[in-house]
Image (cartoon, rainbow, N blue to C red):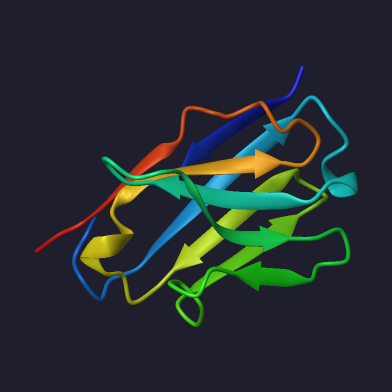
Length: 114
């Protein structure tokens, strides 16, 4: 069955950087669109970045120019490189596959604070 395991979260200072990883299994990774979502306390989950089969990418306005999504189809890995972090980026980050809209992993906590 599908499994998505996020890692790489932690505490970062404003202006700092973090790179998140997502290890995927249980489906044909390269054949599906992949996304990163986040959910901050008291807020709805929102998509921050998506990468399509043809490697086209799209970003939420709030992270455009600061975050970069990428994927390694040979290793079934999804990445999110986050730079110039802001306190508003604090959230639990999840990766998601278009293979199964209902499946969510455990997420990884990102906290941006001085």
